[in-house]
Image (tube, rainbow, N blue to C red; front, side, top):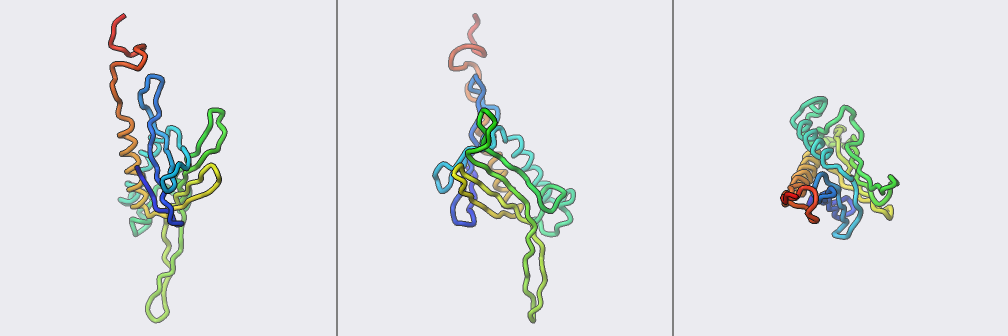
Length: 185
């Protein structure tokens, strides 16, 4: 399970949960959120493909592909052409498509930082950071500020765990011995 230490000192745990079809076969993942071990929400229905694509994008940006090469520090390199923007937004949706019950999103922000120099001189250095924010159904939020390296490690851990959750079990039979059973009729 992937986790992040947030700026308020709390700990956000994100666990991929397999979505299963009518035969019990896993086909995608949803993310369960926990704040300091307590349930916090379930978001991102069928988001596994998107997470895998994001992991590849962050890896490519860190290696200096595309517009990310304009940032000299690999920790400032994120996918996308805009300096600020949204990398993902996963929400909870009910069957009637109503939004509520939690949210997990990641926004890029450009942050100026003053770097003091000698004799009272200094300079501004511009950095980019990923702000991962989670909101529970009660409206209480959490925030973690990550470099691209930290975001890459977090997303890659989620993808690896999601791939483990999607490994099929026994393929020959379903629980009611209907379609897909090995018995001939």
